[in-house]
Image 1 (cartoon, rainbow, N blue to C red):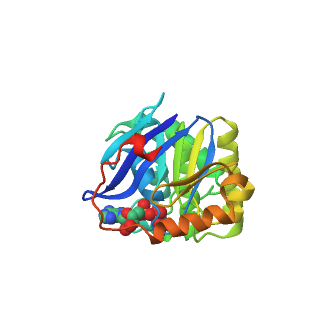
Image 2: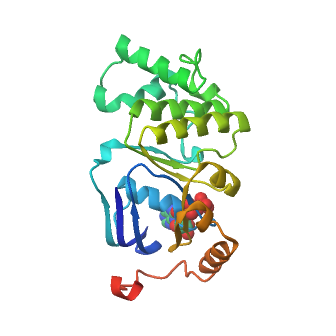
Image 3: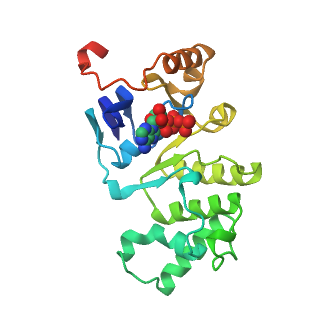
Length: 247
Ligand SMILES: Nc1ncnc2c1ncn2[C@@H]1O[C@H](COP(=O)(O)OP(=O)(O)OP(=O)(O)O)[C@@H](O)[C@H]1O
């Protein structure tokens, strides 16, 4: 489903990830891990089309960008925006509503159903500013639920939420995985990854390892990842290394 070939992504001509070769098949439940600044969020932005490749290719086979649901880091979401839980969750239906579409009774029913699925029944009319961090994350998962996407991208979805909320949302991910959806999640908790994510991608500005989680999350690979991050030059320009040089 996701094919990256000699992919370099970055900002202002400075690479954040370089020479990435990767093939992720459809239906995978994949954790993206790596040290701070490894390029994990950058990869999700590249998949979303928010960043264009500086070099190489990123292809989504058999899927349109409209079929991707993306949950950015909570810190990047404006909680003070004056909208209700219903309005936020209803954004998951935007492709059915259009830009100025009104919510019909049937849509409100779907929203209520999504809120139930994440344990937020009864919160429909609450302003989002009044929600706790965990309630906000459940609400954002309700929006994902309505998006009904083939590919789901999650950036640190379980940061700063309690273990009960985390368990509930992990269950939802398992459910989506069983339905055959492809899920890529940036995560920091190795134990959580070992327990719930069969596949992992370890990034450190370039690929360190990709495959079965038990084979990827080894002390040797983590050491390589840390070493790669330490030796990376933040200000280096894009190098025009060819695919053959990388192989
Ligand atoms: N908007 C931006 N403009 C310039 N540089 C950026 C921007 N966003 C990220 N970077 C840089 O790109 C590199 C990779 O950042 P990214 O956020 O992808 O890492 P990450 O692996 O998600 O890190 P963390 O675990 O700390 O969230 C970092 O050096 C970061 O400073």
